[in-house]
Image 1 (cartoon, helix red, strand yellow):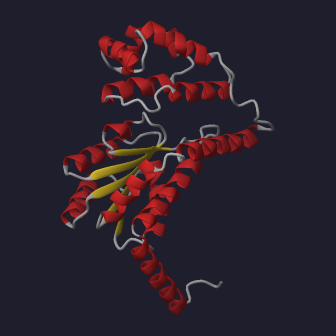
Image 2 (image 1 turned 135 degrees about the horizontal axis):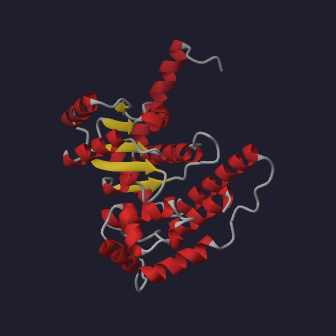
Length: 283
């Protein structure tokens, strides 16, 4: 199976899980099936269990949760999905052009997802109310956390970027909590840093509400987050493209602004006056 067909197959498998409430163990199985969509159709329930590091009965219960009689019925459906249309036949040109075209498809999926505004609205309300607002992003996610925080600081009085791991990360989480933080925005993108997951576990234990922007509704973030906002990552080049997660970050910031419109307007006006006084911009 070529790369385009393999990615399309993974997308179709991922569609099986939309709207289904899965347990952490079931999310692990779902994540495995998405990541190995091209080969999972040839695996038995025991083999899936071993590779996903769960029990065989968990694989059976997972299939039942999706509405199938058992894993054999689910495997038949996976085979149908793997042999279906690639869904990427509209891509043309060289590999660089196809990579950019794939990002357009990721944005299209994100746009369809945003037809349901409830998760975004709920995320905006949680984050707007948190004083301070910690924003977590390690390794590949660090630039997205910084990008979000740069603009969020114009409408939120206290945004704190957590982009360094180690023992000081826990210190800064504890400091944010002591200062009154009630929610955390986390960016978790492949490859998933263990330190990020550890930090999410600590934040959850400390009582933070967690909003996670991640690449998939079955990513490891779902084990910790109250609200999971997925946006696909492009994987056609040597390094990932984060076009859709960056767009989603700005959508979340819009929701924060919408949750506190008067405060947003006041802070934006104050910034513009300060910027004019200091002559920050040439136009």
